[in-house]
Length: 259
Image (cartoon, rainbow, N blue to C red; front, side, top):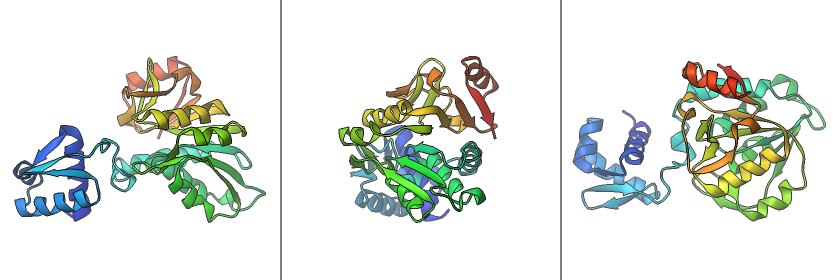
């Protein structure tokens, strides 16, 4: 197992359980206790966890793992979803992209679309995600609008009231949401209330709303509501989605694309 794969596995276990002992983690990953101690020390130095005597506990907000460790989760599903979402967007449209691993893949899919290689602009992208702006800013055919706000290091997103001034002045054709949970009753949600507030504003400024979410996010609830399910026009997910959940979303009026 590579170091990156081991670190991802450790962080997944830590998020699931809240704390890990060195011996417990070594047994789970079939490596030596010395290796786990070294991993814990290095992850603590990056503020991914808090080192304790004999183990580690979650770091404050580490339920929301930094993107470089979350990206590997359901990677192929996210790439398929992203390609399908990108195909829903027309040249010349104004698109809002929230932060997240799936929406980052959407940005990458847009960057390589052959019919978006030129235009004035080929696409206007408004986002509060620093990493997405960074991915697309080098594409001169795209007009990139970055909201103001305070950077949230766990997700590279700008949050807070400073973003309101920008979002209140723009109109979008479509908002593409990355979510941690989507439920027929409770709607789309995020872990963080400030992040959810920005996502909600993007929805309010858009003519239509597309949720890009792999099947692990469906039928789940999270702390901070973004919008009701009837705000969403299209859900793009993967083929592992529970058919009953899909049927429930369709009955609620959503167009569901499973890829």
